[in-house]
Figure: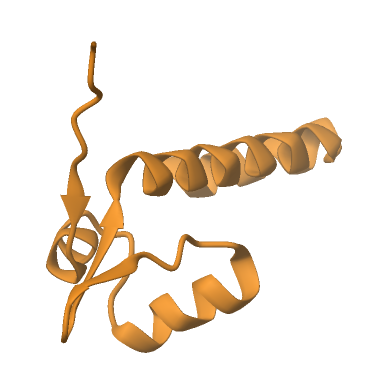
Length: 85
């Protein structure tokens, strides 16, 4: 039987990757933006499944791309210039 390896992320991993800056942000992302809530591995230790976090990030990327496509060509170009800077 082929088992998929589970990679768990801690808050420090999310912070090091630039996904979050503080715990309050994580709570807001869970409550308002569908970020995976993770689970308690033991008392005081919350972890996230890396595959769930990656899927959430890809969903956000896709939504941003779709929103960009709906902009006028001039607005889209300005937006891309700002993101590249």
